[in-house]
Length: 252
Image 1: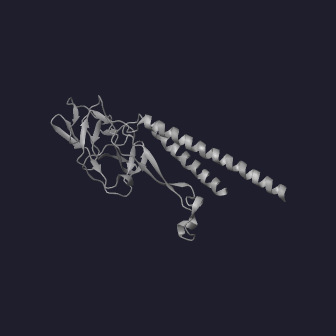
Image 2 (image 1 turned 45 degrees about the vertical axis):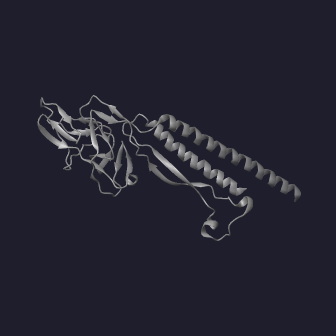
């Protein structure tokens, strides 16, 4: 019976964490370029059984386990829909690729292609205000006083009139799950080396969030119900334990 309490408590913790991730995903359903996080769970075997110290159980005890535990938290990099933009500096990346920006802590990477030109003509990532890097590893700067309008082509080259100010550094990674979310729609490489990507750059557009609000809400309801069911089981087992203790006391 105490084993059942542990299992139910573990189930509550698992569903509580699942709800936390889902709530964050829903809160970012309108955040351009946002990638939702998900969690995987695995059945926890009894420690002694896992070590092989106990023989295989039979009958009603055959499926007795130690509840569940989280195995991994991963980012769903499913590409979000591409939305049109009126800004000539906004881009969407079609395919596997990330824009490179320079932060105080080093290079970071993002799928959020909203950019703006500051007073000095430097292109900056809107969400983080970090300078956007070129393939040469330098910030891209256009002439803010020029009458020639800047534009970005499908290969990521930033044009101003007939001059190229630089080319967006669009990169990819061997293991995207190795990237570490940093906030402000940025990822850290996680020790990996970035390599050049051939992804298409779509100008005057941006990638919308890949969160599907309806599906996330349905999953949130399911997690909430699972949490409540585990809480109910704890209450029932607590009542049963109370009766056992009281009955044994009367027998003694």
